[in-house]
Length: 35
Image 1 (cartoon, one colour):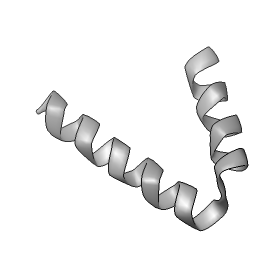
Image 2: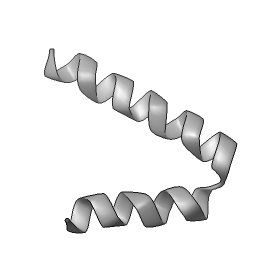
Image 3: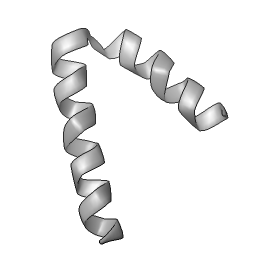
Image 4: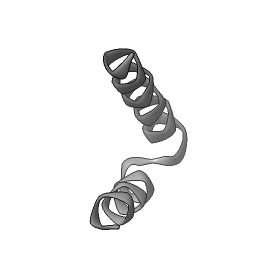
């Protein structure tokens, strides 16, 4: 289940990067990681 969730999350990130641009997604991702 966790591997499937990770796969879906990775695919979602790839789609978001393609749609919105890497810089914006990087900022959001850093915010999520940093908490």
